[in-house]
Image (tube, rainbow, N blue to C red):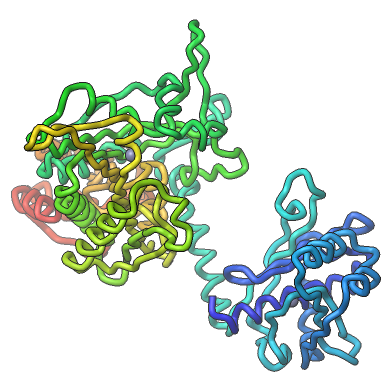
Length: 586
Ligand SMILES: [Zn+2]
Ligand SMILES: [Zn+2]
C-alpha cells in the first residue's frame, strides 16, 4: 500500500470512530488501523445499543459531514498520567497507555478538526492526512460491514464490534473494487462447485472434509494424470504410503514438536501412538533408506498424490480453499549437491508445461519468489552457512538462466532450506501461490540418509520437495474461480454435448457419440425427451466447451455442427474433420 493511501485509510478510521460517537456516545473506542482495501475500527458497545448493518448508512452520512470540517490533524505529546486522565473511562485505551509507557515510547494525542463542531481526539502514534477535507475524496470510501472481533484477537478477551470500511483514492477505484467483489461472488467455487456437481460436504462426515462426486473425481484425476504425464520424462516414479503412522516418525523428523497440536491422533489396540499423516516427506525418506544407495543410484525421484490430514481451526475452513483432508501432488528428489541445479530446472520445466496448458504461464501473469534466509536472523535456519549460500546462488542462477520473473524475498525461506515459489495471478488479479520447489538440508540429516560416493565415502543427499498444483482441493477452488467454471478442453469433466433436435436424429447422434467416445473424448448425449431449448440451456449451464446439434441436414450429409462455448462460433465438419479439430486443440 502506498503511504499516502495508507494515511487516508488510517484517517478514515478516526473519522469512523468520531462519527460512531454521535449516535452511540457510550461506545468505547479501542484500535482502528488501515488495512488492504480500507480500514476498520474495533469498538466496545457493551454499555448500550450496538449498531447493525442497517445503521452503517447513517454512520457514513455523519462521516461525510464531518470530513468537510477536518481541515487539520494536529498532535501533542502528553505524559502517561495525563493520557490516563483523558481516557479514564476506557479500559482498552488505559491498557494501551500502560504498554506504550512500558516500551518507553512517547504518548501522542491526535486531534482532527480542531475548534470545529467535529473536533475529535484519539490516542495514536500518527500517520494521517494533514488536511483530510482536501485530501480524501468523499465519494471514494464506503462503510462495508460489521463483524465481531476479540480485543487484540484473543478469544479470552471481550468480544468487540468491528466496523469495516473500504477506501481508495478515487470513486472509480472504489467502483472497480466493488465490481470485482460482485464478480468474485459469481465465481465463488462453493457456488459453482455445486452447480457443476463437482464436490459436496456432509454434516455426518464433518467440516473441512470434502466429498468428490464422479465429475469432481474425474477432474482430480485429469490434473494428476497431466502432471504425471509431464514429469514422467524426468524420471519420477510413483510410490505409495499408508495414511497413518507411528508418532515416532514425526518425532524423528522434528514435526512433532512444531505441529503436534494440528495432528489427528489415532488410537489402536496397542499402546503405540498413531497419527494421521500431516505430510509425506518423512515416509518417503524411509523408502529411500530401505536399500543402500550409491552415487550411481542418484537422483532418486518419488511422486505420490495422496491425502494428508491437518486439524485446521473450524472457523478457518472455507469450501475447498482450506480443508482438513488435503490431497498433495507431492514429489521428493534425493540427489547429490551437484545434481541440485538440473533437478530444480526439471521441476521448473514441469511447472512451465503444466501452467502453459492452463494458459497461465504468460508474462505478467506470474512471478517467482526466491524465498531466501533473513540475513538478520541466521539462527532461525538449520544447516551450514556454506550450503545455504551455495543453494541460494544455485536457485538465483537457475532463475536467471531460465529467464524467470524472479524476485529474491528475504526471510521467506523455510527453516530447512531456500525455495522457489511460483505465484500466479487469477482472472480477478488475485495472487495465488501454487507451485514450489524447496531445497532441504535438514530432513536427510534427521533421518540419517546417506549414499556412497565415487571414493567409497558415505555422503548425505540433498532432498528437494516439489509440488506442481499444490493441494488439489485448493488448486480446484482456484481453477473454478479463475475460469468461472469454463475449464479448458483437457480439464473439462465433460468435453462435448451432443444434442439431437428430435427423436429421428437419435440414431445418427449415437453414431457420433460412439465415434467421439472411442477416440477418447468425454461426451454427454442429450437424448432425453426434452425440448431443444431446454437441452441447450442444460449444456450451457454445465459450461461444456463444445456442443454439437444434430438435425435433418447433419443426419442427411453425415456431418456435425460444432458450436464453441468460448468463441460462440459454429463450424460444420465431417466426422474425421471433427476428430482432427478436437485432437489438435488438446
Ligand atoms: Zn491515528
Ligand atoms: Zn515434502
